[in-house]
Structures are given as structure tokens and as C-alpha cells.
Image (cartoon, rainbow, N blue to C red):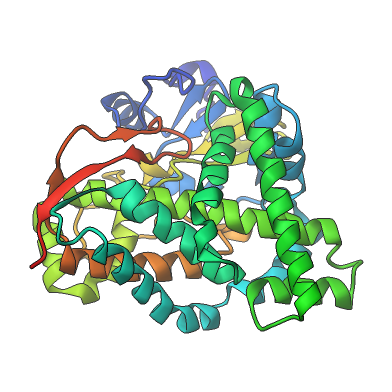
Length: 402
């Protein structure tokens, strides 16, 4: 077997503000090697290697080390280390089992009519105008008000919640250390909001909703789900549900604006919305890499990976790998694509994926039917095209609804 060393691999400077996951530099590196060196460990670039290593039991969830990588501390870092996402083994399974009923397909089925009603209401607000700032007019309020539906809280809270989620989301960028005071203040405020939800429900009586199911689990056996773990899970649901769905819907619109024939097809064939969600997440995911860490010294395809090495699975690169996709171009009619990694895979796959898939399917189906011929009316702005990415502003013009 050929033995490789890290020095043999291309280097990708993912700390560079100009770095892009969709750049020719990444594509060239993928052609040269299945992995690359980065300032944060190694990056896996090809589909087959990502699909295997993302499930490899010698690797643990690696994102827990993100605060340490950035030399950051405080309430966000403390919460990040406690949550289900960054727990392992029996501890992870315990929390996941307790939270699973709150994210079930049954709940999505109940909420789908509410998703449709909400999407139509928001589109009503700008459809006749022929233009909107799409992030603020649709992506942000839709993602956040879906979370309000899930929590059973006042939908009028959405602007406050999205602002907190955006500030917390800055922790997932490469300026985390510089922004940590703002990030920690937003985290503290989000925890206070989550605690108020719990206190209000306990005072007026539990219902059949998401938060009540967590409260019951805590009441039935505090040793299985502590008060802290319960509130941590609520904050994770709010933050994750807002930040990722907001970004993913915005990235979907950006992708379709660049592929107008596909948008027109979706508008005429709304049953394609489910496939459209999967295809957008393959080519333009908000989560552009998934992180693991080596639990032991290990060897893979001739490369020795030392214990403690951070291993980034570059899902954006893997899901456009021509070795895995005969035609990697964006096409919502292809029903037999390989799995994308937008929700992760393995033990740590996203627990909220049923809800995310459900609300985005309803949103894209209705948008494509009612917002015809979308195009940019100005220059959009985006978060950096690495880590967790998404649009900040999207001035969009379209054919006014009559």
C-alpha cells in the first residue's frame, strides 16, 4: 500500500476571507487528491471518501472543538459543548431518544397546512409589487415563524428571534473570536427567552406541542433529561431551525435565479418541490462542511491520520464530484441522486430534518407558483462561502401577480 504524507496534499486556506467552497481552487484540489490540508486540519474533498469517513467509528463529531480552535469562550461556547450535536455514545443516544418525538414526521404532517398558510401570507405581502428584499420579506420571517409554530409562541416575536439567531450564528464563522462579546450577549438573551417559554407552559398547563414533550420528559425522569439539557435543546431548536432554514431558502432562491428554466418547471410542476429541496441542498448547502475528529491514530487510503486531527467533510465539494455524479449540474427532475450531506449522515444526522424538509418543500412549491421570472434587482450580499453560508440581502424583481 502506498503511504502518503500530509505534505503531499494540496493546501486550502479556509481562513482566508476570499476563500470559496465553489472555487476552481477547490475543484483543482479535488482532482489532485481526495484530501487537502487546511489551517484547521484536513479536508476530505471527494464523495466516496466523505460517504465512508462521515460514518467511520474512529471519528467523533468534531465541531465541539470549534470554540477552542478560535480561542473563544463564554456562554455560546459553554452551550455548544453541552448540546446533543457534540455529545457522543450513550449520552448522545439518550438525548436523541428523548428529543425524537418532538421532531417526528407525524408532527410535520400536522404542521404542513400551517406552513402553506404562512408561506401564502408572506407572499401576499409582496406578490403584487413585483419586487422585494427576499431575505427580510420571506426567508427570515418564514423560517422564524415556523419555529414559533413549533414552540407555540407568539409569531410577533419573529424579528427579535431572528436577530438573536443571526448574532449567535456569527460564532460559526471565522471571526468568532472577534465577535464573541456580541455572540455571548445574544446567547444569554436566547436562553432567557427559552426559559420564559418553559415557565409560561408550566404555569398555564402543558399541551401536545414540542416544548411540552420535553418538559414531560424532564418531569418524568430528571436524571434522563435535566433542566439544563431541556433548555439547551430548546435553544438549539430555535437557533438551528432559524439560521439553517433561513439560509437554505435564500440559497435556493439564488440557485433558481441562476437556473430560470428550473424555476419555471417547478412553478408548472409543484410536485417537484420535494426533489427541488434535495437538489438545492446538494449543490448549494448552507452547511458546506461537516466536521469530525480522530479518536485514535488511524490509516485511511494510505494516509496516517493522527489522534486529535480535525477532519472536515467538504459536502459542497463531494456533492459536485464528477466521480459520483455523471451529470452534477443542477436538475430538479433527477430522482435517483446519491444522498447529499446537507443534514449530515450517521449517528449525528440532523434531528430536525423532517421539519426542515417539510417547511422548505411547501415554501418552494408556493414561491415557484406565485413569484414568476425572479431576477436580481441589485447586487445580493452573502456570508462567506465556507462553513455555514447564506445570503444577507437579496433584492429580487419578478413579474407582479395580478
